[in-house]
Image 1 (cartoon, rainbow, N blue to C red):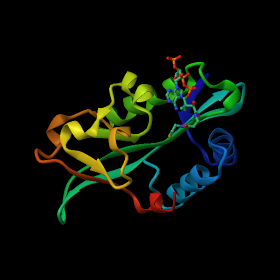
Image 2 (tube, rainbow, N blue to C red):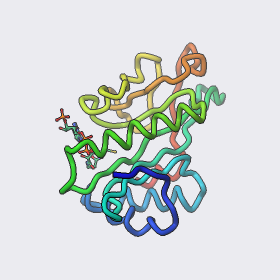
Image 3 (cartoon, rainbow, N blue to C red):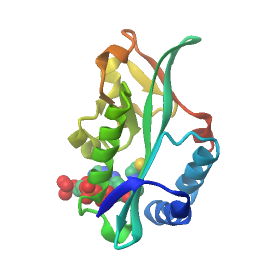
Length: 168
Ligand SMILES: CC(C)(COP(=O)(O)OP(=O)(O)OC[C@H]1O[C@@H](n2cnc3c(N)ncnc32)[C@H](O)[C@@H]1OP(=O)(O)O)[C@@H](O)C(=O)NCCC(=O)NCCS
């Protein structure tokens, strides 16, 4: 199993594996929009035997309160593994590698909208703990992994994903 940054040659396989994992083209189309607008901060694939079997994307997010932009961070979305190969640790490997790269890039925090039972193993916790909410009404599913606590505004705010997420 090899984890590496996506290349142009992977684009069709990334589209198909997200479509298979989500039973929809919504996430695949989101990834295409992010790529076209150069908003894929990190895009990693897992390759097994020359085949792309997993993918994870990260894009910029901002914390806004009132009209003020208070902080910049990274949003994890989406992550997908081919259905036949799920529950073998591939998703976890992608998430750990993504977190490692975000740390290397000195990102202050990573947010994710997903099942807390899955993401808490990586250190994510409800973003409400830091008075942060999202624009999708995610509630407890909206979680944060703080890499540098100093980047978070004391009074919290609303975390905005880039506009390419509006059509999801
Ligand atoms: C979510 C996903 C990427 C995880 O990849 P994976 O390779 O199956 O994950 P891992 O093998 O590393 O981890 C498996 C563990 O996660 C759990 N898990 C997987 N998906 C989960 C989910 N959506 N909610 C809660 N737990 C989940 C499994 O039950 C298993 O738990 P265990 O370790 O206690 O047995 C994969 O299941 C997938 O592609 N799902 C469809 C797309 C999706 O929902 N993506 C996430 C939202 S962006």
